[in-house]
Length: 292
Image (tube, rainbow, N blue to C red; front, side, top):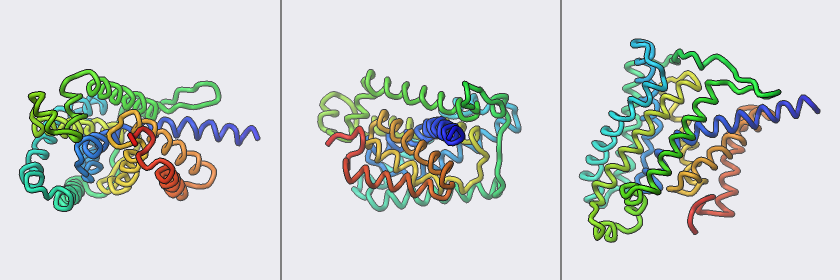
């Protein structure tokens, strides 16, 4: 009985910490898909791109993974603005973003993955940092710093983004651009420029998520395939476009996967998590924080 209680507490803590990291990965999709209506399924590959650049910075230059991730948000932001500009010219102006735009991001996903395989091979890569090995003990519960730090960084990133969206003109414009472009134009803002900024922020978040991913676990180029379904599931379950919803949904998915993996085996955890998602969407199709 005591052993089961100990395992349950460990599973709950591990699930919360991993769920916080999931939120960092999903926030970019929540912005792109939920606020802009852009189905960027290449987002996991861009996260992996960030992971491998952080790996190079760490192994070749000795830069701390977190510092490298923060520094990468700047070039990744501009990468996002360039990607959106091409997407807008090629697809949005022609009204072809639904299928052709989706194909564009499919192609980007596989090009990025193949490029990483050609450069780094298929071996797992990991980084070194003083906080990756140690564990912080809080009573009977162990908190590995390699999981705790990504959770805290993810929480800080979501909090900063939420303040930005709620308190700044640009943030409110991003939240409004998918709802009423005409009203936004009447306020003196260009929907195209606003969406370019938003997509840049979305891609910038992938750089930091990539750093957190390689801190949490070793990575190889095809890991992104395992992340696509989970990231979109979190976005939909939380309510598309809702950052608090993204965080709550990520914690729910993380806890369910952790408990299932602990007591029934890791092979069952994705099935149970997605089964729970389907049930939740039947009860509330707009998601936890979505507007009916």
